[in-house]
Length: 108
Length: 114
Image 1 (cartoon, rainbow over the protein chains, first blue to last red):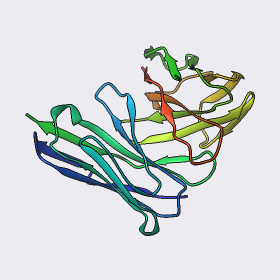
Image 2 (image 1 turned 60 degrees about the vertical axis):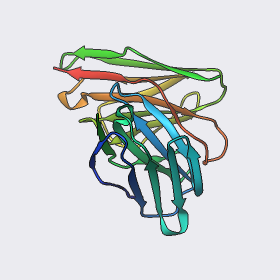
Image 3 (image 1 turned 90 degrees about the vertical axis):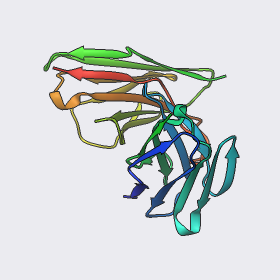
Image 4 (image 1 turned 90 degrees about the horizontal axis):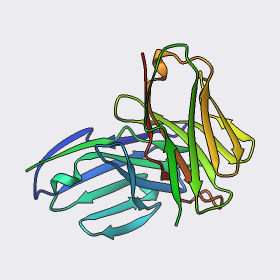
């Protein structure tokens, strides 16, 4: 099956810093999403981005489908950005495969 | 707007006891429904998905089963819990259109088996 690898596994930032999270996948996909899991466990949709670039406030994402990777950019990080960021891909009708996540800690 | 509910929020059960977790979706019809498990705080594993009433597909062999008695209701069950069933269980839905649609997650149930 498809492999989804996220890097780095852990990231510690000072408030205000910028960061880039990466997601590599091993096969062609027709759906890619980025999620943020907050400390209470809720998974929040950030982007649906099978290709191209999207921006939402301080967050932006780029997927280069032909090269099988996606990047999530966080600018001017805040303590509320802390949590685990997941990349998930869908390569057939119903199977969404998640990466292991990047655990982000933003310190005040 | 659509909302997804899960209950209970937390559950502590002894080994060998039965389990029933419920997930319901409001504000949409004919959704695809999913059960995931998350162990040790990261990494979601797809357990079951359903494209319609009574239609369940299982991704991994396990001690759990799923049922969909109504269009917007998805139930995760076990006859006898194992210690290894502990984890965070998440229900999700997606519109039943193309494979490109977004999945939306419920708040989750944290299960501890003692």
